Image (cartoon, rainbow, N blue to C red):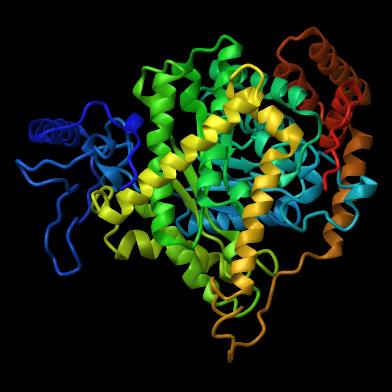
Length: 568
């Protein structure tokens, strides 16, 4: 077993283990549990958690512990999923706001617990639908959002004060977020009660996904403003979802995904501290977004290690003392890159296995990919199958009955320790890259030097070589390629969507108060130059129906745009 000295706090004997079990039992008894049947299919009762037998010792048990207790390897809550199951949060968006609104209502009616907005490429890049570079892309990989009026339609009939809303967007995340706030205002919502998550993670854009607008420093300025504003005005809303998903989809290993993501999280902690924020207040507003890939046990180990690493570093390096500041809460999406265009029905099986790994690792919310997403956006039928996959796992399999059921497994614990050790080596290297020993400086230098992208490219190349040698096998691709399956019917977004969206945007511009828009944009730029928090002035621009492109273009005029250096 790989064990590093920094894992230990001096070891645990049988008395320590017994005392921990008693602490867990008290917290479990005091916690609210769901009114549900916690027995096997055959009717046998199961305990809410399992650990070493009474009187037994377990070397290194302080690294494992009990659910709801530092280092949170086994989960954040003493009840596991007996207290609350994970949130079913299906990622959806296509065409225009009206079409996506209908899909959201379908998901909520079918038992989805929250919304997760997918935006089209022009929106992700901060461009309006009538921008020449948006031609042919409007509504194709997500919903088109040009101004707050589109947000009104997107959430029509959905009470934003009652539904948690996640938005997967980073480059123009802040202007899109203020449009969401305006839509909530127009519904009459109390903004302080809004709950959800905004991705906002700009580090991973430079590392993996490439959807940035400006250089890193102005992006971090905006993120800092957002963190301050949410901490003060919207305390339940999480302004940052630190994303490993796109790092893994770009080809990283599991350990690289974990380490780069947590390092990015440490960078945002350093940003909050630099703004004078209290880590115990803002750290609970950071959440994480991970990939659940196809290697079942490795993924479970990754999730368990993530909680342990985050809690230790927040406590020891950044001075967090409150329990919630030490908690790593995360959303998981099954691996899009594991889906195959060949024999796509096999993707249902892949998604189920990946979702089960996320659940066994203790995810807080989950999106399951649809079988046809490697070909197009999901149809209503494939989206329902993806949703039902989660519900079958939740309702039929018994996985919600026991917290961290694989805790103590020799294999899973060794994998957890190994991934943690690999991540720690990467953190050390990142700190060495920087000029002052901070994680932030190391990340910025790693972006500038192409260190992250180079490592990910190398990992992707090694895996591709293994596929081509048949050392790694994918059913339907390089193994078991014969099939009787017929071609799938896929969702196609009509060109009419773009025509209508551009026409409506033009009409909206013609009918608004252009003087008010111009004044609001000027106030926003004045705030950028003065150093004051930019959220209030950007919010006023959104209320005036300034478009996403107009807001982003004004900021580009002030800050310039970022172009990645060419590397060979």
